[in-house]
Image (cartoon, rainbow over all chains, first blue to last red; front, side):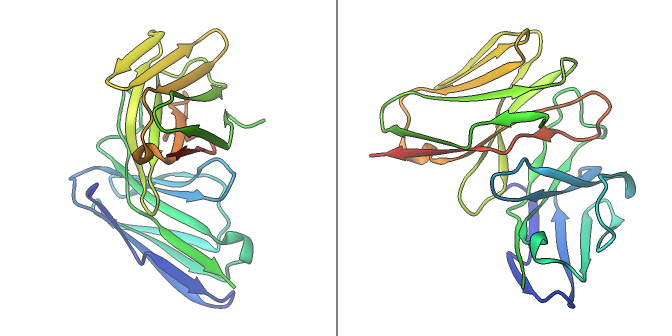
Length: 116
Length: 111
């Protein structure tokens, strides 16, 4: 148990659906992240939030829309996705931002997304 | 090319040593990390090394850093079946707000 909880664990959606991924951290951290994990590719940073403010958007298509209503919760809203968006989406948190000086990232178990 | 590169797969026998290699590009990285991902789970920090060190030992784990060649390795002594996982190398690139990860090396330990 890392203190970062993601729901749902698995999600199957059609290309016209709208769904949301949820992440909650119980660690009192100030920064939260979305990463995308695809097979045989580097882990891709998508978004970074620090104190509920988006501080990095790593050229992510607009069909992915993040939301951070408070420092404990992070959402990723999905709409009109493509099959190539199928991947494991990982949420992480850290005490501080930017992540230097041996900051540790704490990851959730991820949401395995399949887009049909 | 990619910022952090790793080979995708390594298979060893139980009891042998495993060596997982990584190359990175940012010479100004302060810390370099190894994260472990077990099946069905997120990544967990395994160990890290400060960039002015060339070696760090932590029980069965040895991290070697060759800063000149930008090469990082993780050696696991007496590898056990429970070490089967994906191992990610990561660096804290200057000017970036998050860690940069490689693609991960899947370690398979055979009994």
